[in-house]
Amino acid sequence: MIPRISAGALAASAFIALSGSLPAGQASACNRMDGCIHDTQRENYGMMHDGRMSEAMRSGAENVEAFRSIGTEASQQEQPRPKPRRRPAAASGR
Image 1 (cartoon, helix red, strand yellow):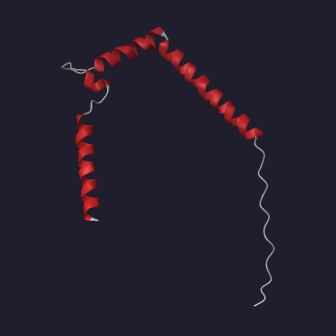
Image 2 (cartoon, rainbow, N blue to C red):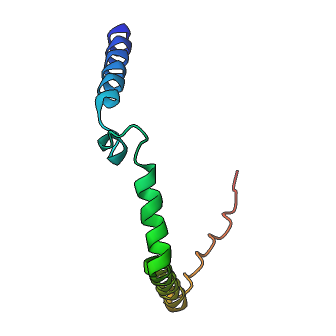
Image 3 (tube, helix red, strand yellow):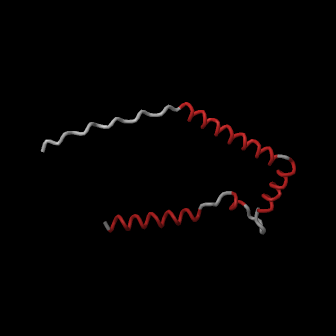
C-alpha cells in the first residue's frame, strides 16, 4: 500500500512540475512591458465601430434560435414511453 501512495505522490508532483512549465496560450506569447491587453481593447473597439460585433451577436442569436427550434421539434416528435406494469402481488403461503 505504501508503494502505491508514494507512486501516486510522485506522479502528482511530476504532473504539477510539468504543467507549470507549459505556456499559458496567447498570454505567454506576449512579451511587451505593458502586456497585450491594449491589442485586445483596440480589437474590441474596432469590432464595435465597424459592425463586426453586431454581426457576430446577430449570428449568435440565430444559432441559439435554431438550436432551440431543433429541441422543440425533437420534443414534439417524442412519444411518451409506456409505463411498466406492476406485478400482481404474490400470495404468501407461509
